[in-house]
Length: 84
Image (spheres, rainbow, N blue to C red):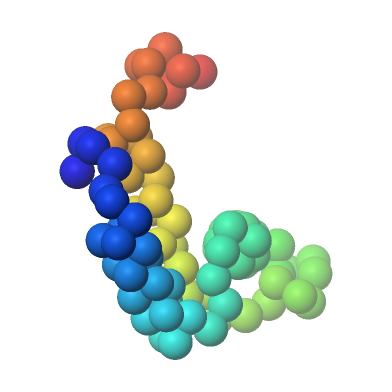
């Protein structure tokens, strides 16, 4: 995991993961996670766009948390940057 994967292994793996996420989630990305976070915070009381059942978007949150976990554990980010 610490070394870059060859394209012929990483490419199909990424395609497989993304196809499954698009199949189950239908809407995926950072903007979708920001919408979900806004709905969790209760902005739906003021803006109708954010008034939806955010509990059904668990795969979106897992995707975001998994990405954050990978970035923090696999890359060598200096600790003074992480705690700013």
